[in-house]
Image 1: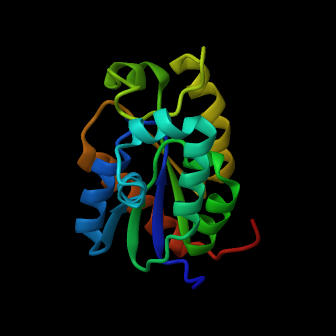
Image 2 (image 1 turned 120 degrees about the vertical axis):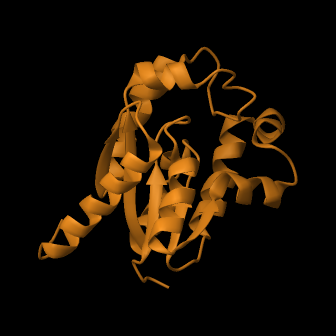
Length: 177
């Protein structure tokens, strides 16, 4: 199945992927899935517990496998913030849809995230949130078909911006990337 009719949201934890994804799916009449929930269902435990038991690399391997196996159509897919570490999964996502990076400034992410370990954020020993942000932003930009800047504003405004940008893109002839 290589039909490119899905929208895949990537970005930092706290960037609003799940919240924006649910509303976007409702507005455009798509289904919605959150890959973090697929991972939890497959493993039978919360993300933080998976990281605890399998370590960061073990978690990333599970995440890559789950993400690379997502086969859906006309679906908004909210990924975990660490999805971009899985090359196989990201190639798969680009094959099945448009990858949209919800870009949020560091200070806003820091403000939104409180207990990142409990939330199941993949953070290596000694790594700060700033380190993680700097490392991941490069990967988000690498894989994004579309970057949508998000301020501290309304979710509906972000959804509208995504829809406008997608509509503008659909009106342009598509050439090689």
